[in-house]
Length: 249
View (cartoon, rainbow, N blue to C red):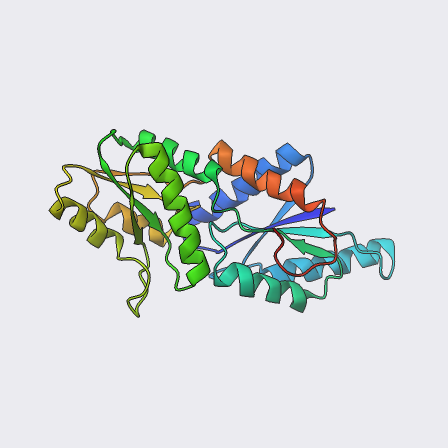
């Protein structure tokens, strides 16, 4: 059984390293190798890795003998990349035995990780919190961001605002992070903390740092809860049939 962790991709070397470190942490917990692929910005793509795996295993084992591969989308909601891009890469690869798990988020584990990151950043009880997600036009993904915000609200003790690091150009979705911070101040907030609902460093995290918050949390990255969640997705996928190319619950 092979595991492939699929992330968005970033030009930020720290973000790329963070994804690699997440895969290494998963490998340590699972006692097996975990490969990495990216759907955007840089490679290798999931199609390339899956095709290579199938070719290598056929060469080693003989025609038709390909081990199942579990693909874990390292995304915090099931937007376009998870529901369209990843299955398209899987189908194009020709790999005959692939199971795609659900995205990492939303999850109570991630909400607790966000709270820990807020505490590390200097958040104080009573600070207004803006949950900053990447941004999506997908209604289902927006609903999942709202679910994540509700989970974080329960932990911080008040309703958190939602903002996008890359707000939708058509005006749908949520405002830019800087606008949400400014709106909170106009509404009377003395201090505003930005909770990063991002997995790794990159352009979007840089935008959070420039949004004017009094405290800006780091991305979720290698928080132990993220590692445990990714490992759990992998283990639960063993219960699924190994021939699917679409996301599974």
